[in-house]
Image (cartoon, rainbow, N blue to C red; front, side, top):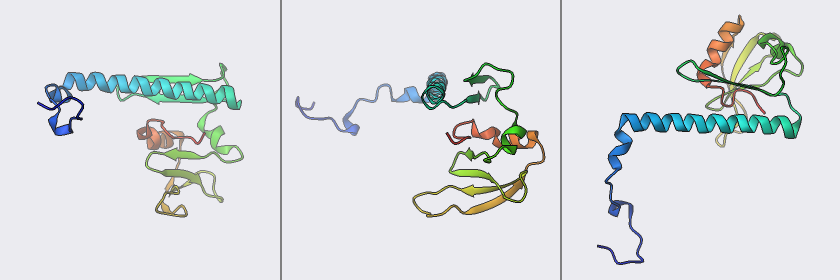
Length: 155
């Protein structure tokens, strides 16, 4: 027994429910709660961006189960624009991927893309890593599907 007023170290804490994180049911529930909370936060932030910065926002989140969550700042058939309109506009769209990578168009061909790393603490300048060619909307959406929409477009 520890005297009152002293702090318990991590090793001294009773770990009676330490096995609860191993329970697959509790883990699944926690995963769903985390997803729901983060999705609501993302939608709230998209709404704030629309209201405070007067920006049109379209947000699509796709769950592993295939369920979609959609937020649109404008209720119109013209919004959101299709992917070809986005990438044919000027100035050119900036697209971001998780892990600090950015997909940028090259100057010569608007349908040719270059994958580069964003600035990090280790590097002063972005470094080209590989080139890919987007032949259709399907190939582009397949390429970004794993990104789970987080950080896909610079805001």
